[in-house]
Amino acid sequence: MSFFRYASAFSVLLVSTVWPAWATSSLEDFKRPTTIPFPADNPYTPEKAALGKALFFEPRLSGAENMTCASCHNPSFGWEVPVETAVGSQNTRLGRQAPTVLGSAWIHPFFWDGRAATAEAQAKGPIESPAEMNLPLEVAVQRLSAIKGYSAWFDQVFPGTSVTPDTIVAAIATFERTVVPSYAPFDAWVDGDADAISDSAKRGFDLFVGKARCAGCHTGWNFTDNKFHDIGTTDADPGRGTFEPANPKAQFAFKTPSLRDIAQRGPYMHNGKVPTLQAAVEHYLSGGIDRPSRSSLMAPVDLTAADIQDLVEFLHSLTGSRQVVALPVLPN
Image (cartoon, rainbow, N blue to C red; front, top):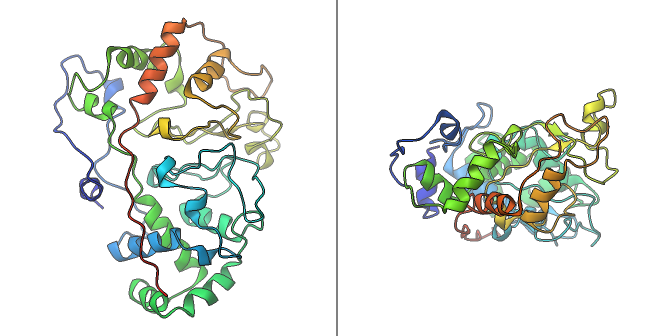
C-alpha cells in the first residue's frame, strides 16, 4: 500500500524532497518511508482494511458490548488514552498504559513486554483477556456470523473461510497497519523546509542525537529500536523479565515506544506515571535507578534547563495535526 495514497486519504500535507545543504546521514536515518509494509501471509486489500476498521470500533467484540479496541486506543489521543492506565471491562484500571497503535506496520514485537510477535497475535490478546474486552474469540465468531452484514463482508474478504478467530484478527491487524503517524513539522524539516521547526527544536535534535543520547534507543523514522530496556523506573513490574527470567538485562525492561505524535500521547512510560514530556526527559537525564538490569544506554546526563527545553521543543516537532478518523457504519 502506498503511503502517499494513505496520507492523501487523511489530508496529510506532503512536501517535495529537497535536502538542506548541511544534511547528514544521521538526518537521513529519520526520513519517512514511502510505503507501508504488509506481511505476505496477510496482504493488504482495501476491503480487508475497511472490515478491520469496523471491527476496531465494534463494541460487540467485548463481552458486555461496552468496549472496543478504540476504548484503549483512541485516535483523538495519539491512539492511546489520556489517563495513567487504560480501564478494562470490569471498570478497573489495567496494570499498564495502552501502547499506541501508530506505526504498527513497523513495530515488532508487540505489547510493552513483547509477548506477541505479530499484530495478529496482539489483536487476540485484549479481546479474550478477562480484564480487558472479555470475549472468547469463538463467541465473537458466533456473534459476527449471526449478523448478515458481517457474514457477507467476511465472505467477500476471506472467500471460502468467512468468520473465524484468525480472519477477525487478520482484518484488525490490517487496519492497524494503515494507522500511520501524522506528517509532522520535523518531517517537513527533513524534507528541506528550513523554517518548518524552530531554532530551539533544531538545537534539541542535535542534543537528541548527541549529548543527550536519546537516539541510542529511539532510532529511525519511527523513533524506536523495537528492543527492551530497563530505564530505571521505580516500578516493580518485571516487564520483559517475565519471559526471559535468565536474562539479567530483561528485568524491569520495557519496549522502546515510538516518539511519533508524542505530544498527543501523555501521560508517559509503561505505567503512565510521568505526566509531561519535560518530566519524561528529566527522568531519562537522571539515569533512573542504578541497578544491574539498567540499560547500558542509561546514565546521568548533565544538561542545562535551556537544553531540556530545547529537547522538549524537538519532541513537540514530532507531532503533526490530529488525525480525523471517520467512524465506520457498523452492520446490523
